[in-house]
Picture 1: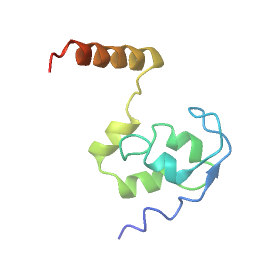
Picture 2 (picture 1 turned 180 degrees about the vertical axis):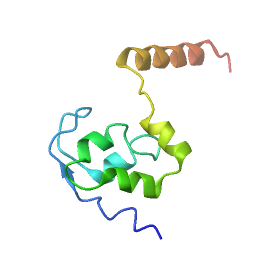
Picture 3 (picture 1 turned 30 degrees about the horizontal axis):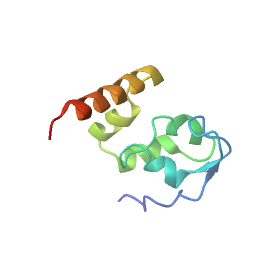
Picture 4 (picture 1 turned 45 degrees about the horizontal axis):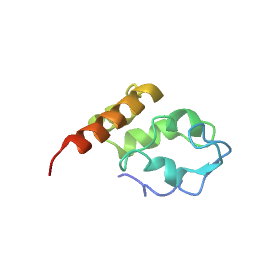
Length: 92
């Protein structure tokens, strides 16, 4: 039976490589559209059995979404620009 998903939420990682500040697990657990940040395994490995936690609380499909290869900064910028262009070209 899965334990409470929020049981590690108060743990603080000393430095988030994305945000550039200390961050708690609660934020990291929901960072990508309600799913964990792709770096959660690396950042929280020294704090608790984060791999076991992920395996316990997320389906294989969900794990593939956030643990798969992440987009690079350039790819994210290009996608954001494409969305802006599409929005600007939409006459409605």
